[in-house]
Image (tube, rainbow, N blue to C red):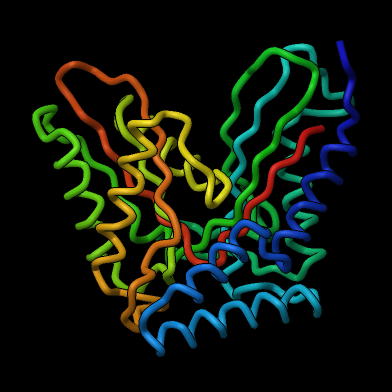
Length: 283
């Protein structure tokens, strides 16, 4: 049994949040650079140039990439031979989240659903974090983190299609979601698509799909081909960077598929803005 100290987890989580708040991941930066080079609209090309300039300034001056610093979302794989000494893993992640958001001067964005009262004094600064746990073999803790902003989350959708809808039905649903979203999620966007499972599994899968490295290829050849097809259709919508019109509405489409019930076809679309702040560490 490997023992990991509570405070070591706190520090690791704190550090990745501070880093991601100001430093756009290289895969996202490269995808935006490629989009700018390929964009056909002069207006959207200029918008993409400004987005990249903003990323350069944020990194050099250690300032937040965006005023919406998002909610902290984690996917955590916990080895079955790991023990946390000094407290619960969930508490360590939450404590690291609070420290990271405070130390990097990131906005506290969690609030009561109806009163809209900020929870920073009641629960903690930008708490609770959204944490998805999985138990796996091994003696490490694998942590994926992303900052999820409100603009992109607000246009995300889930449904359950009839099985006969097939790929055409999934494509139609994704296109409708992105078309209705328009400029609101701050394109060019990354689109996570969860297919199969149950209603909630599809939604979680579509969120997790956003954590994949931009530019990576799906391990399933059929899904890889479908990702390319959907991406091409989304970029025909003409929404463009920040809704200014153009050929680069989406940077990537990432699919996660799961076995599902014979009578249903759950589908979820989760959107990430151009400021795709994510990282992956192993403790």
